Image (cartoon, rainbow over all chains, first blue to last red; front, side, top):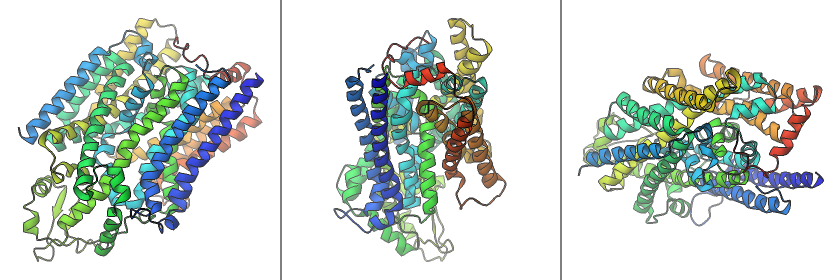
Length: 83
Length: 556
């Protein structure tokens, strides 16, 4: 039972970390700081704030889910709760 | 062969293909009917989810919508993708482990209350219905735009195909047709994106062309010169607060929409639900990262082709002729100088552009082969059909499973249950058609409701049901009612009764996020002031938190 509680706590801290990244990219960089970030242009392309809001954020979301799935698969195995 | 002949041939071929899959995927038991026998591999479910999610409007109208909103179009790009992160991390694997058939079923069982079950059934039917009507309408629009078919005829043809698949195969038939529909729609959309990117930048990958070319900035400058708003600058069309809250409402609403959640009931294991959400978002992301590129390239090209050009010369271009005839493109030489002026000032502006032109004109602008134009039409149809089918099965299963099997006749035999499920889905599909043909005017405005309601009712109560063992019936029901009443009142008041956006200027589209916060707050306070849930419910919560055993939970 204690082992399961430990598994759950590790799951929760992984979720928290990934959701912090999710919120920072979408809401802080993609919206709140977008006017400031629009002063930066990388590779001669569109301004950075605009690019994050319309392109970069989506790629980050995809990567976050795959990281979660892979880390949880390892965690399930470590605690012997895989299905 | 002419463009029209190719389009007919490819559309009819795609319908035949869907019918064939529907026949192949017919089922004999309720688990097959409601959750495809939980035998859908994670990658296939990802493709089915993507088709389920991306509607006819995403396909035809979204790039155009973004091209007119500029930066602020990001509310749709981030809002309709970011919710999958919430779904994968917070909901999907646990609901799959629980292993039942519907969303109201989880809420009814977790909160040991038939009142909560019935509230969830009504909310699920309402949310899916308001969302389904524009989808069915979308099928008719796609057929009329590309083939000139009468909207009503197009809808009835599509409805009969959908009814055949859904009655024979239920969720299994819908799932496998959605997989094929995804392939059709993404192939067509990417061909358009690639052709357009290559035409303007010489780089065929739309995402790279968008990132490494300066067309967004050039479009932005051109718009400023003409007196329109700056394209790349934030908060030109919506306030910063509204951009924030609409994005949040759409994300949370996505994660709480029943037709999205139930797709994850169909995979074999709880851990598959996590991977499958990743595949789903990758497949969705292919279109959602192409759309902003199409928006920039197509709008830049359109403005460049029309602005300050002689009207007679412009009318020689074949695609201009075609879309001027349909009324989606309108010219009015107000100062009589024979030259087209465009301006942010409506008094001197001489060109009116319907946003759908951005995508619809792409095949001709990029000079694609006639059979590709046919494929593009089939893609739009696939997008609209797959979403409509996914929504209609939620409505049907709420009635046949949650109401009939769980409440009215729990002792029904397997054969009776399956017969009821089939009759109900047939009736739902056929009865929905007239609403698509003549949508009541208020329905279009109700789509804000679907996301607002899912955000303020389903998302918090499911999340708390998993992550807060102490959450009880009293807290969850109070939270759902407060979230529902608050959100519904604000949307009805500001959309229909002429109220101003009285809470900090927040629009109806963004209010669901506030409703969600109220739901969380009320649920927490009420649950702590009332007794904890029964021991067996707390044990259920502990069980759904570990994936182990989900593969065996195939029996209902």
